[in-house]
Each structure stands twice: as structure tokens, then as C-alpha cells.
Length: 493
Image (cartoon, rainbow, N blue to C red; front, side, top):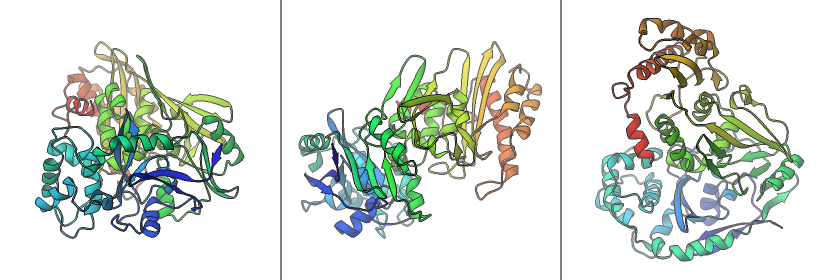
């Protein structure tokens, strides 16, 4: 039960494609094969949004559209989805409501970024969350850069076009599209190529385990938000690709009273609200995790397995005491998340072993959590430092503490010395907090790079210790935050 094609929905009908190189990006397919050049090639790394297209998949009985960066998405990853590009919006000859609004509000000058912006707003048009405000539009457009028009008229266009119930041609044909997409879901494994070079998409964990055991040198791809850059920027000759997006069960979220189980292929968009309910700071970290395009493709398992020392999610989950489940063949094992990271870009993962699930304990009574992302830009920027803290209180004293930082070492790393110094501190005696702040210097000797100097990182981390103690002591964050914790939780819900 293996097929050698990918199948997707395009302009009202099923399309099958085979025989492509495993490194083929969706952008190259559109521009070089379909000759649909409305989708632009800009940064080539998923930052500018000029290449944005929409993928539609059935959720809750209807087609749900999400924006993706075609420049770093592999062609094979659109299997089972509807592909919509900017040319499709006016295929009948009339402009789409989003396009008409962009014209009416003067939302375009040079036009290079405009197709990507239109596609991001197309997904917002179909999102169903109305009425909108300017901040919600800004969140949607965080991954679309415009260097000449300015964002005010673009946001005006969005507020005008996306303020009512969507009634475009995609809405009219929604039921037909949903039926077509469900007809593509055959539950078969995909293998395109030969043993020395292939694109594969197993449909079950058993198939994945067997294939990866046979090809432990293959590159596992979930959202491709990082591997895509290996292809477009590092020019890596990746010959074997195993995409995890069709593996049944890896996309499940198991939400119980005391813990949250997150499958490896759950996207950042899908897990956002669940994490925000654990604590609003987690919701804010996820809101600032790349752009909507990146969050729609990127996965929790991919973020962890990638092992980046500046990844935002790992240190936050380490501070919460998360555990990681891995599978090799038919064997599974579990370990504390912090033990998975050995050294820079090195993880405790055996040949043929893959990340299966991460389990995050929820906060108990008398436990508090804070997480802080420090970056040059507020939106869509890589962290210079990310600090995460969980403290257990006994009255007004700290009984236990878990502290983890990203950007301070070659891996996401706990701050053992700082944790020990925090235990026993009184929240009513700020004069005693100095030792815990000073302990940061014993936990980390950060490097200088283009994002921040070692001295800056050390100072920021030290100050974050003071910040978490101040906020925990007073219970107030309004004076110390750009975005309040309560506002963040409400936005996620």
C-alpha cells in the first residue's frame, strides 16, 4: 500500500505529481513548473513573506486555510492539501475582496511584497474571527515585510475586507473542496524515488520506524522551517527526506488535568491555546515565535529535535519539567527534556530514533511561572536570551525553583547554581536577592555573536532573575511588561 505520487487539490480538482527531486521546494514548483510567477522569491528563508501561499486542510468539517512560506516548504509537504496562490483569487476575472480592498486603500506601491500580503490576508478573511482590531491584523502580517507602502493602508484594507463573513468563491465551493480533500486521504505510505534518493511520507508510526531504521541517514522533516534553510542557504545536498506530516497519531494533543501531551508534529499554531492555558507567558512566547507562516508549519517536535540553543520553546518546557518520549523501531523510551541536549547541535538520539511526544506538567497550587523573550525586534525575531522560571512557594518563601535559559550556552540549559540560590529566599527581602542574581555568572559563560555580546547576555539574565522575583513578590506585571499576562491569555483563547 505505497504510492509514488503526491496528491493535492488545485483549482477544484485533484493533481498528482511524481518524479520530483526530494529537495524541490513549493516555490520552485510554482515558478518553474506551473509558471505561476505571482508568488515571489524574496529572502529564501521564510522571513519576508513575499512567497506566501495558502494551504487548505479539513478541520471540524470545513476547509481551514493557513499561510505558509513556499520558499522553505518542500513540494511533497502539500500532499493532501488544497494549494491556493495569488493567481487563483481572481481566476474568474473579478478581484477577490482582499485584493479590491488593497486597491481601494492604496495598499501597494512596488507590488513585490503584495502577493504574499494578499495571501496572508486571504487566510485571515477565511479565519472566522471577527470583528478584528489593528493588533490582530499586525499579528497576521508580522511575517510579511513591506519596504515602500507602509503598513497603515495595508491594515486598513484588512480591516475593511475581513470584517464580515467570507463569501468568496472558495466559501461557495467549500463543501466540494472538503469532499475532494477527504477523498485524497487514503492512508497509504508515500515513497517517491529510489533507495539512494527519495521523498517519503509514512502514514503510520510503524512505517516510519521501519523506514527510518532502514535509512538512519535520512533527514526527518516536520515543518521544514529549519531544514528549508539548509537547502536554500547552506545548499546542503539532502538526498533522503522523510516527511512526518502524514504519520497518524503524531499530531495529537492530550490535555488532562495535570499534564499536556503534545505529539511531535503538532504545529505551534495548534498548540498555542493549550500552552497559554498553562500560563499566559507561554502564550506570549508562542505568539512571538516567528511569524504566522512559521507557526503554521513549524512543529513542537521539530523545534526540540532541531536542538537549537536559541529555540524559544525548549527552555520554557525544561523549566516546567517536561519529559520527552522517543521511539526507535518498536522501542520507546522517556527522558527529562533537559537531558536530551548534549552539546551544540548534539542530542541524545540514537540512529533511527525519532521524537514522538513531549509531556508538560501543568502548574500546581503555589507554583508560579514566568518566561521572558529578549530580542532586538519585538515580532518575528530570534531571541538573544530567553529565560524561564518556575518557583514553588511556601508562604512568602521560595521552596523549589527550576530555571532554564536559551541563548546562554550551546544548548538550552538549566541554571543549577541559580536554582539553589533561589531556594529559601524571602519575597519580602529584596536585599537578599543579590546572591541568586550573581549565581547566573557561575551557570553560564555566554558567547559573543551578532545578536548580542556575552556581557549583554549575562547582564540581561541577571536582571531577569530580579524581574521574576519582583513580579512574583508583587503579583503585578503591568509595570514590567509591554503586553500584560491577562491580555495575552485572553488573546490566545
